[in-house]
Image 1: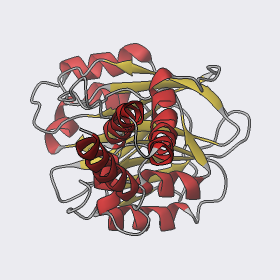
Image 2: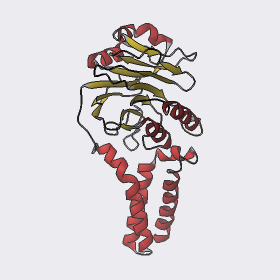
Image 3: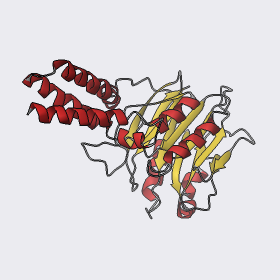
Image 4: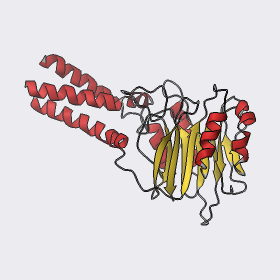
Length: 295
């Protein structure tokens, strides 16, 4: 039994180590999706091994490694870093391009009356049937991608003329806002593709290089298709000088209780405070996120 547990502990610990190698190879981010579960397995196997006796320093080191990996993710799901809400609201939503009816999602977003909206998977169908939502916002940028899935931003406040642009291939929309207090933060909508073996890592690097050139604070809402502790998300948040607001919770509707997937998120400039809550799927395969914050 000790041999079996030791073998399982070593194998899980190696896999856990691989989950941190995203900056070196994108396979690390794919494994990072399961970091919480792998870390828990390392801790459990090492703890039992230590009780049975044997190489206690090996068991102790494995327990510490497992706890060190699990603790920050568990704290994120527990919402231990929740801040105070503020006067601004941002609604993040992947619309899910295969959903035909748009009344439910349109009514859901309008019912919250957010100051800003970041959208992904906007289709030609949406351009026709979400007119009431788009018309509610005088200031907006909807990318005109050739594909049937694009991104966009809506704002109650003016966009600084000449700053709005789209990266259609990378699925990014961005524009600088002009807020009543005179500040001019950037508002960005992001839709990353699937992780390795798909090309998410390269896409994230391109986005990060663009965001790095922004002057001023950056607000980001997006469907990242990867967990927030991944290298792709951390790279984008790092160059933006932004932090994720609110607790982790599974935003992808097919998520299982044992594998919640917080792949959508809102990121605020460092120094901002805010809270985020889950909103109904409203016909999508992603939950909405409503963030209330101050800058």
